[in-house]
Image (cartoon, rainbow, N blue to C red; front, side):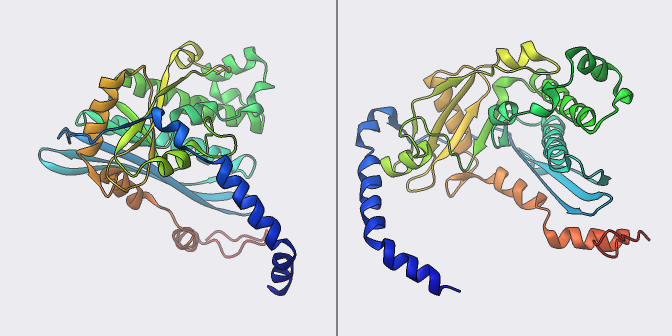
Length: 321
């Protein structure tokens, strides 16, 4: 089947070469050198926690069988401790992926609460700003009065959209608890990849900083706010200033995107980098890597769960033992 691919390549080879040259020229990054500060952080040995989660599911005609897993890995003076959580259940098929994303996010936050008493710094995988900025169009058509009633009386949910709204409210309430009990000063969000493009249109900022310098350092921070509606705690979430920047923790290692849910000056940024460097292995926080390996739910795991439950097939004639 590759014959047609090779035919297309022969036709477009010269054009592709030309376009690659144009992209390379457009991607010249030397002019952004002033936005990068070379800095080798001095490792700070403080109690830290890394939190990650995962989910997987099998789709049937009548239901979705799923597993959600999350874990906080904590390093203390006494050694390494883990706070795992998990859930295996059935869901109606409507909005299943959205529900599972919210349940995984809520479980990650619950693990952060579990570890809060032992960690001076809690690292969350991903971006809170992105999670809170994700389009939630399905609930904006629900009248505000109805949304307020559902927040107080969940049992009144009548439609799939309303039940999904309850999942969103549960996630937001758990996040509010984390912000209140843990505090924004102890949180840092770490992203391995980012498609954000503020420097060169169409080229991720992360790629620009990867190419700019192989040395440890960090980019000029940017501040972001949230502007859309929330069904609960709207004033709280819209008052958060997110400080985002890119950083490399070890020479030649990958650039990470970091996010602090607070205003942070250069001294605070360097302090956070020092704490991350204290748990860094090969340019990435070890506790986040360990948490990730502990929570991954593979398709094979789901097949084993299905077999244990007694699901015989996925043709619409499911048999539950």
